Length: 192
Image 1: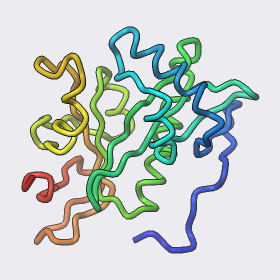
Image 2 (image 1 turned 45 degrees about the vertical axis):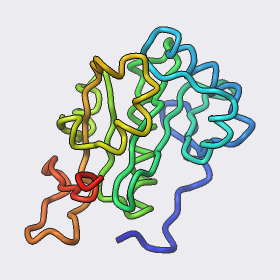
Image 3 (image 1 turned 135 degrees about the vertical axis):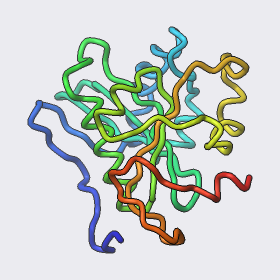
Image 4 (image 1 turned 90 degrees about the vertical axis):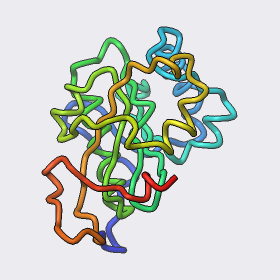
C-alpha cells in the first residue's frame, strides 16, 4: 500500500533531456495541438478546450526545454483501476523513450493512488508489452467501452487492442496474483 508521505515530484528530470510533470492549465493549447494532430489522422479521439480543462488533472506532460514533446493521462474508472490514455509523443521524437517515460510516470501515479491495475486501448500493443502490459479482451472493460468509446467513429468496428498491467494483488481474491503475472481480476468491472 502506498505511504501517505509518498508523492510524485512536481517534476521529474530525465536523463534523456526532458522533464516530466503534471499538466497545468497553461499546457492546454500545446496538448490540444499534439493530441488533435493525432486525431486528424484517426489515431486518437479529438479533444476540445473544454474537455481538456475539465480533465487537466489526469494529464502529465514531457517537455524538452520549453517544447512540449509528449503527454499522457491517467483516468480513474473504479477505486482499483485506471486507464492510460491520450498518450502522444511529438512525431519527431518517437522511439526516443518519451512515451515509455510518460507511461512509467503514470504508473507511479497509479500506484500512489492504490490502483490495482491500469489498462489502455492501443494500436501499438508491442510498446505496452515492453512495459509489462498484456493483451486482454476489450469486453473485460465495459465501463470504458460504453463511457468513452461511443463517441468514437470506429465504435462499431474498433480495431484497437486492449492491454492491462496488474500493479498489485487484488485484496479480495482467495489467491494472490503477482503484479508481474499480467493477470488481474477486476470483478467490479464485470458487474456494470
